[in-house]
Image (cartoon, rainbow, N blue to C red):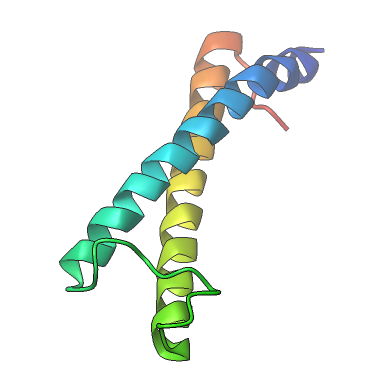
Length: 90
């Protein structure tokens, strides 16, 4: 029964944390892209004036940053739910 409580408690928390993680990851990516010495704006995949290397490097960096932020936020949310409810969300 307590596993159900943790799972139900995590649903809204996980949703809100997912939105927050996306915003944080986007901001971190923009900062990392600038620090790498590139333009202020990362290239879009359909940007005609950018080469394959730059497009794929931007996508890889963005994906890596998003994955790390999402994992950290998901883990933190699960720990918070366990502390609150006493059960780990599964």
